[in-house]
Every structure is written in structure tokens, then in C-alpha cells.
Amino acid sequence: MKLTDTLEKAFNEQITLEFEASLVYRQLAIELELKDLPGMAAWLRHQADEEIVHANKFIDHVADRDNHPCIGALKAPKVEGTSVLDVFRAAYAHEQKVSESIRELYRAAEQEGDLDSRPLLNWFLSEQIEEEATVSEIVGRVELINEDGPGLLRLDEELGARPTRSTEAT
Ligand code: FEO
Image 1 (tube, rainbow, N blue to C red):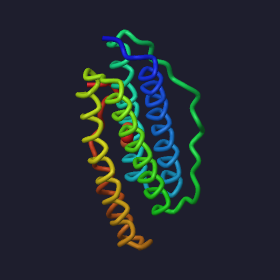
Image 2: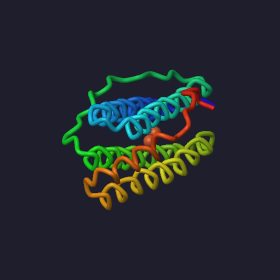
Image 3: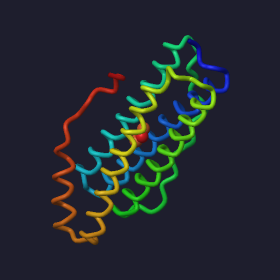
Image 4: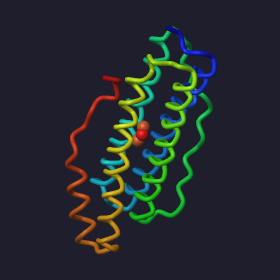
């Protein structure tokens, strides 16, 4: 069953937002690369890739519903402040924005009585809980480290150990 025009537009806005989230993470990765924190930069870069996976999941869904996925104009990521804490707080704020957008999409789907998008949106609701919890924990740990060099280097090493993944929507 096709998505209604209203839902097609809402899904396409979500696709655009996921690509924007990727750009935000990519820029944040650059900021920490410049601070000689390659592990944290790699972690953020993997997040950037994961946002592309999210965009691809939405694209596949819209196409599978016989609608037209369409990527909108992407806003350049605005990164203010470049301390490690600023970077992870910015990441957390963006995750919260994405979570709210997915809740809105869920509400819109409910309003249209669109049962077919429920499994995908449920997956995203769970994913956002996980994403927010992960980034929030890093923010908490960076606050505890409080700009202590050896502490930052330990966290850098830990975050750099994350395995890489493909950007295919699996
Ligand atoms: Fe696609 Fe990190 O939310």
C-alpha cells in the first residue's frame, strides 16, 4: 500500500534529516581529528556512516511502498565550540532532535492509519533510545574527565576500538 502524500513528504523530510545528522557527525569528527584525538574522531565518523544507514532504511521503505524517495536540501552542519565536551553535547542535542522527529513521524503515521510503517518506526524508536543513551553516557564521562589529558586519551583509545560497519540498510 502506498504512503499518503502527507506521509511521503514526512518520510522524505526524515531522509533529509538523517543525511544532515551524518554531516553533523562528520564535522564533529573533523573537529576532534584536529585535536589529535583519532579514536574519538573515528567513533564520530562511524556515527556519520550509521546515519547514512538510517537514511537508506527510510529510502528503501519509501521506495518499497511505491512512493518517491527524495533527498531535500541539506543544511551545512553548524558546530559551535570545539572542546571535547562541546562536541559530544552537540551530538547529543542532535540525537534528541532526531528522536523528536521520529516521534512526530510516528504520530503522523498513526493519524493516517498507516499500519505498514509501524515495524520500521518501532525499530527507529528503539534505535533512538539506544543512540541517546550511548551519547549521553559519553557526555557524562567527558564531564567526569573534566579536560584531564590522560583521561581523554584513555577514552580516545576506548572509543577508537569500535568496529566498522557498512552503510547498507541491512
Ligand atoms: Fe539516525 Fe543517530 O539517528
